[in-house]
Length: 159
Image 1 (cartoon, rainbow, N blue to C red):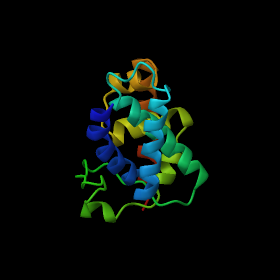
Image 2: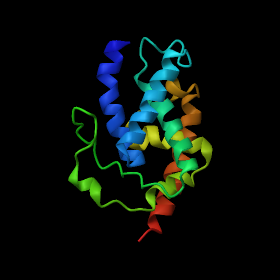
Image 3: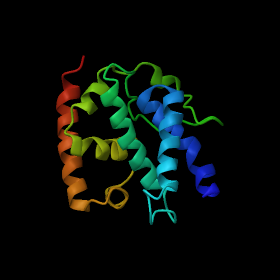
């Protein structure tokens, strides 16, 4: 478990910070995901928990957004931000985001939000999302298709 923590915690905090805009909240969410893994929620995932942890954090981010609808915007997935030792992104191109993007992702149907975060923001392929979330690959593909269409329509309307 220590190797998983060492290899995953920093990049996961960096990714989460890009989504929630606050490194302290990101650390809290990632810590909660590791706690859930240790409590057995990710039972059977200890041999390869990377994708499960990203899926868990995506769900926690979604819950965080629901509790704070006016929180800072999600960062667009331009490219993977390099992480510092603490795991925070240091990407100057991420400072000028479209403020509406978080609201757009939040407006996706619940079934699409986590899948969209994992695919468009974490870069996980369909098969890994399916395995991490316990859904079939065809269900994930449908969710991504719906999410992509809805995101494209919504973003076309953003100035």
